[in-house]
Image (cartoon, rainbow, N blue to C red; front, side):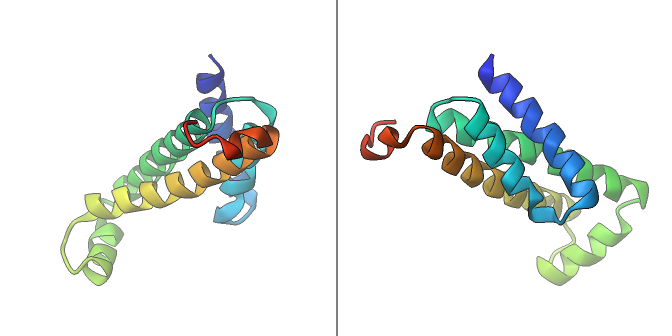
Length: 121
């Protein structure tokens, strides 16, 4: 139950924060939720990663869908050297997921520092 609550809170706080703050505000949001909701380090990473992977993936697809993927086609040609707007959306979601997941790990380790010395967690 903590995992689902954490996932939803990270997604909601990150979405709200990104409307008025820079894109990297997802990291403090994920960090804060991981500090406040105690979880294993692996579950904290997974909740942060999945929350932002789904959020950024869905939101970037929605924005791209609204302009009929015109910008995504052009940017994918510049960055990926192929006309693959779906790959660009997946890369965007992966970047957001990794930033939030790593921030969630930091929050989980701050809450319980004894985990640092246990490599099995």
